[in-house]
Length: 265
Image (cartoon, rainbow, N blue to C red):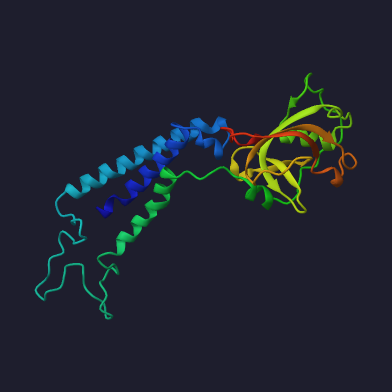
């Protein structure tokens, strides 16, 4: 049975990928929506490869002269002096191939991570990942931005809100009511932020966009909220003092985590 370990491992990993990409939207915790077809193809290929490996292994086991599942060699009968055909012991009394009867079974532990991924997909990145990132932002030149849509409140991503607050010389946020959705992170001295992770391709390249929220009590960390309020100017355009931007909250409403927890960078 131990010979089927690689096949089982391939099938489990493939099944886990198919579970999060083909049968649910959990893949959005890790990659952008456009990568879904590639995940489905990869998962299916791994499952088929696992089946193929199992079939080849089974056929090899059925051929004459192969060992049984207990690891005894098919031609390994003892010679005239009572030694196993390939199982001679060395000077220290260990088997010639260095494996005890249960040694290869340790390899089955490799299936545990794949099985865990299949049964318990990890959550999306949250406050811990956001707080680990230093306040490093891509250099952007100060300039004018396109006009915002009419009407209040206007829904903005955290990335767009931050860009306009810090770099927009036209001050397009001035006097407008905005609505921002993200999860809660904390700073020092009771400061809290509505935060979102921005990705280009997958969770591995995530960066942070956030806005300091004033005038409302902080919900628990990692709670998803929608904050409605107005921009509170701080610092000069493009300066460190202008980051992170500030919003004076009129309301804070708890919401479910969206299917796609990341913003497109």
